[in-house]
Length: 156
Image 1 (cartoon, rainbow, N blue to C red):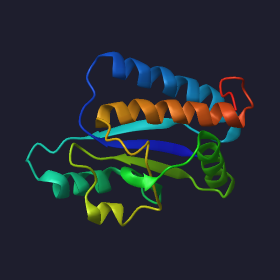
Image 2 (image 1 turned 135 degrees about the vertical axis):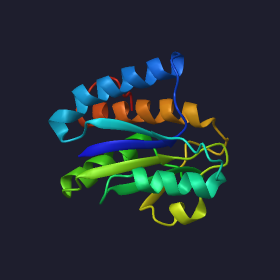
Image 3 (image 1 turned 180 degrees about the vertical axis):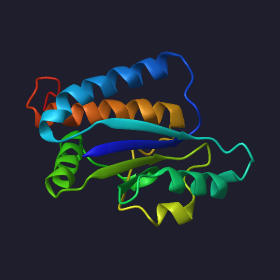
């Protein structure tokens, strides 16, 4: 199952980008034997200043057709890493070809786009900068693949 991280903003060179690239490379190696991956990062930039609604339209247009959509949102469901791994594997086992994780800009995800999502996940009740959410998502993808592979990376 191909995975897209569809996010507002351009990630520049720096520690966040290095971490994301490292975790996604690890995910690709660990996930492929389980039908997970590759991951593509799709960035959109609202240069016309359309706000949350404008970002929502750009994000929606960038999501692969037919993808199972997951909003990363502070109001989303809190789940454990093993449950996240199970969710990914279940979608892959069901024959889902694409999954898209959607990360909004500073104001979050437009309500109209949120309504099109199959699920909404949260990384906690705190508000996180959207660039750090990318890092945490990349790490959780790698952790999920490690859990599926029964690797010692995840200590339950």
